[in-house]
Image (cartoon, rainbow, N blue to C red):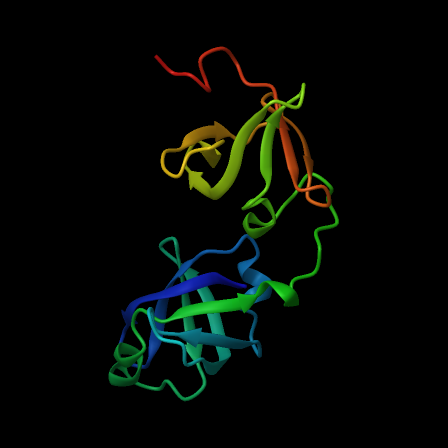
Length: 175
């Protein structure tokens, strides 16, 4: 499975620098000088490899210089490129309370007494924190948004494929 770690937003300057929107918790490692990035245009399958020559933060974005991208024309040509990593290449987290989004997607959500709630279809990242988008049990559409906080999510077992929650009144049945 592929995870997007960044997206080329636009060119920066005339020497081929790229403004990249970061989509990873560890940009220092993922975009380190010498790292080989794999990128593809949205809705395309062909992967292209790029080597990072320089990286620096600028106005909330990452500015990258890539080997072979030496002018504005070349950088404009890869605008929109998604930099990806394969989940099989990711090391497991050392922290038992940290999870990659793809590890949570598809897990069953249930109450502490075993009552099924649904399954995680997506992890949403907002300014207020992470939310689990859960497809209600037995439904093909709809979603329940569950804050991914310790007060509500009481346990996560990726191995067992289950997330247990203790929701406050009204969270599962808003009226």
